Image 1 (cartoon, rainbow, N blue to C red):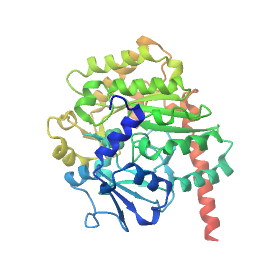
Image 2: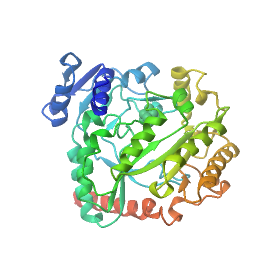
Image 3: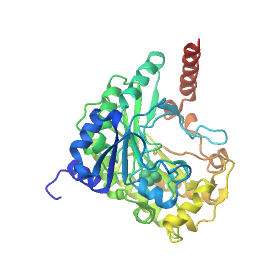
Length: 394
Ligand code: SF4
């Protein structure tokens, strides 16, 4: 392993960790299928005419969910790639952006992962027809090409952990070169960046990392890159002119949380300058009530997320009590301010009450962040979609 490049090491790890790769016959000739056929040993590959495990439907058991992370299924997406950010719901104040889901399920294994109650696919799916998503974007550019727009790829799948296999980043970065007023965001807990570092770009690609203290990573974020590896990857991206952002999310309460989160802020502020980081978001642990039993079954009561006392918020999710969230956010915000008042830190996926309690302004109200959170952009996209739907119907 030592003589392999980082990209080769990432590939080799992925090839080892997947036990089976099922390829839908209809996309057998696609470039992605051809690439995986070349990369994986033939005994791991099978060709299928329908999704594996047809007998599995509805909510997955803990075992089925764990298995789904080790079984890759390549198929095509039959539907529309673009939809609104899940944060844009009544009762939540959040960033509004477009989500491109080129797959579903994640090869990493965080104890709090919302996919546990969200997905019911017994396999990790990757769609081979990214071209169609790019066609949809091209169509969108006809009505919104002159406006700023943000596209994220990390909702149902980590943006980069599988990228050494798919190389989707290459196509996406190339596309965004032609649309410099739009922004592409990769969100990840991996350190797989080498495969795109040499790609030409126009400075409109943000690579963002979810970060936590190393103790939390070891305890709750299984199979993810260490904090050091994530920060190192962020430095590499900055060196190549990519934008870098961080999400300190989900913050998880534990006995030494103050010590560990202040050390994390100190580490970040010693390695990055506020003017190099367009934003840093904070969020606290939250999950759907129906997820709790699966989290307990899969990670046991040793997990800090299973020890916490949580209360149902207005959006139906379980969260820490408001006072505790306020204390944790104020503590971290204060620590950043001690280093510099110029850090652009805001709360995401939080209720307006928490904004008020921490004396924070919504990101849309902060001049430097407003273009990233312009709800008019999404509204206008929705209107153009509705218009197109009407045109199709007539
Ligand atoms: S990295 Fe994200 S998507 Fe993957 S398991 Fe962790 S929380 Fe879930």
